[in-house]
Length: 381
Figure 1 (cartoon, one colour):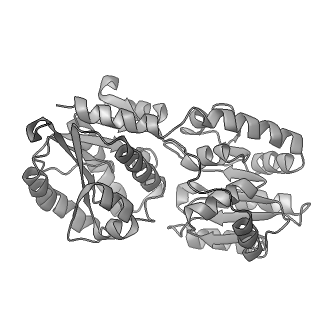
Figure 2 (tube, helix red, strand yellow; figure 1 turned 30 degrees about the horizontal axis):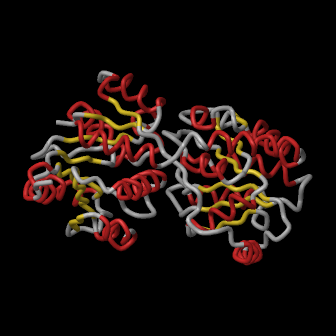
């Protein structure tokens, strides 16, 4: 195929600072990995990344044409400037017919048509959960980005409806490209699981798993309060928090201390995907008490690994679980204590949820979203 027949699509990843953007990183990285497996001969994807992304995801850098901007990604001001200067010029030099801005905002200066991934509109619906500068910036830029985009990608019908209602664009301009879930790349490692559990003092212990960065909307405090009620009658039980420290980290630590749970809550920090996969398989139940989710990748991961799920009855979580998990009001401490405690005492019910979760997870596979994204790249003019 001659060069003129190949569509060049740039993907703006300057916003993606590894370890700091939570599920948005997981979704974007996994979708791109699957896209690389398609090997399209009519679309060339070009990544525009920051230095931290290059260091954290060398596999993607090696599989796509990649340009690294002269920024680390940590400064929003520098990123905005670079998007309107370096990115605009670089994408023009690369003759991109489309630039996909995958982080929810588009620069005001663009030299190619833009597609936009809108992970959620939480800064508009819950501005109190964000710092003044970040919240004000997103509330100003996100709606304008949505209106300027040729197509808006959303991960769920929940987010799509929110975009339509809050911004006022036509539903026909939105494409749903959900998350997927794949089987682990490596075989189940019993020895590594034993080592991991021993290192966390979880050998032969039941435990509740919550994999999330300690951001305000992740609502760790409600789970701590509910766990305090459960552990009074289940002293062998542990609560395991994985994920890095966010802006609510000190608040979460204070809640653990206030309930006297220091010896009952295990905090691992950010861990490798392979270790998280093992914890899903070993956990008695996975709790997901988030106050807002545009999708909720950990819920899908847990179900695919045979871990029963209790999740918040809000956002996209009912849509994702599809009846395969138990749903609770995110702020109902007693409700969480009853739901989690009931499952811990009811292995038969856990078995039912495991089966339902496996069946539900079969509806999600990364190859389908990747095909949808590739079709989008081919269609947008």
